[in-house]
Length: 144
Image (cartoon, rainbow, N blue to C red):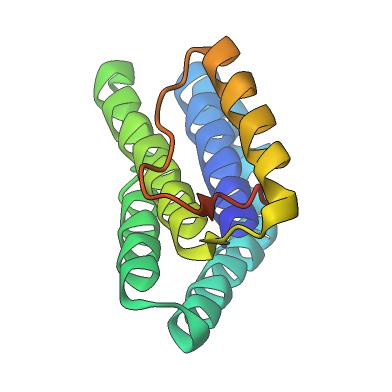
């Protein structure tokens, strides 16, 4: 789901920026890109259906919000500021989806995984990120 939404977002972002910046000069190139856009959209819907099939209620809700945010990008938007607000909404929805998936995939740590947890906390502290899981015994899984 994350890959499909990122690919869909990237194509939409490039499509809209090219159309806004180049205007009519970009029409031939953009018309040639339409089959790829359709394929990417179908990949995104397929990924959403996969999440609906096996995801928890929280993950399904976050995935549906992500697809809604990605679908709300107006590729014909003329005002860059308004388009940027929608882009930020998609990025926030992607982050929320990823955070919920990480939380959902967390598991109880075994005794030999405590060292990993300490290393992870040290790493996150160095990054300045203090969003660590507060419940004892849980280790977030880092997705590839």
